[in-house]
Length: 333
Ligand SMILES: NC(=O)c1ccc[n+]([C@@H]2O[C@H](COP(=O)([O-])OP(=O)(O)OC[C@H]3O[C@@H](n4cnc5c(N)ncnc54)[C@H](OP(=O)(O)O)[C@@H]3O)[C@@H](O)[C@H]2O)c1
Ligand SMILES: [Zn+2]
Ligand SMILES: [Zn+2]
Image (tube, rainbow, N blue to C red; front, side, top):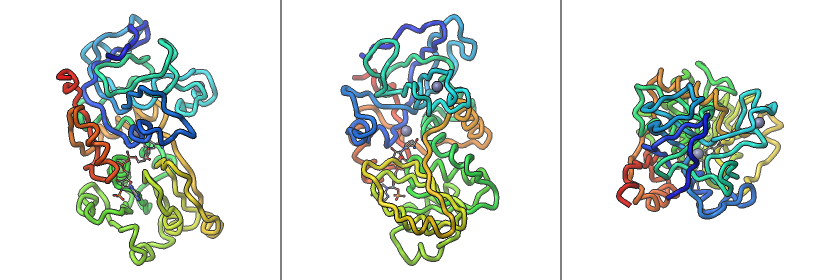
């Protein structure tokens, strides 16, 4: 049993219904990001949380008992620094991540959503549009916002040619969101078997990224590429696909550094950048956007007992397209 604090006046207590499995959970459970954020064991991952509000503090106005509430990658920040004031809580030096982050109330580290319940300040609890299925909505809290934020920042709109590299949890949400934004979407995948799914999810074209001939046909033609690949890969092959002033944004966080040849950036003034989840207001904006367009993740719902198997499948890119853990299964433990 994980210790959770009693709700203070600003807190919301949530019984967790579903929690998505993000590849970041796997990276951290296996301490693959040891250079940046070493894992403190025991580690309880999970930052794609949807649940039922079971208790609220006296000053909570946003939620009442019985509401659906959602929690993503952040559970706290100082609220006073320039990043917080600008709505970028994810960049706050004092941000508290949902797991493996210093826990301010009880000491130790925070524990995430692979658990029965969680207590979070109401500022970091999101509303889930009522038309969205909770199991499929859970992954929006990380995969949804992590793709929505850079797509919006880089002004992906109708008429833009947009690439999505890596059709996994993040990638498939990027396809759905970019399609809903009206872009011409091209999936860049290493898995020929995902072609039909990519088209069904909203892609206009599919390119097998390991096929140099297919890649060459798209050379210099993309306005924007979102790279959601979780492992080492040839980013240069994607940079060559960008047009003048085109941008490729990394959201994938491979364990090892990627070599980048500078010349393809110099020619055509292309740029390479990164993006980390999104702020709280933008996360709510994304959820409302998904509500309006009826977008959720394609999920395979699993009991907690299958979590290790799910991790192995994630490594083999064998997931369509997000695992969502039914937390009721914890009760049989
Ligand atoms: N920046 C952020 O804020 C943020 C937030 C969440 C997650 N992440 C990171 O984003 C990455 C993706 O997360 P995810 O949950 O979407 O993972 P995922 O579901 O495992 O999807 C990753 C996809 O990458 C491709 N891929 C995997 N191994 C590959 C390889 N060796 N070479 C080329 N392509 C490969 C596969 O797509 P194809 O089969 O289509 O090739 C796979 O489906 C992870 O590194 C995760 O930690 C970052
Ligand atoms: Zn995540
Ligand atoms: Zn701050």
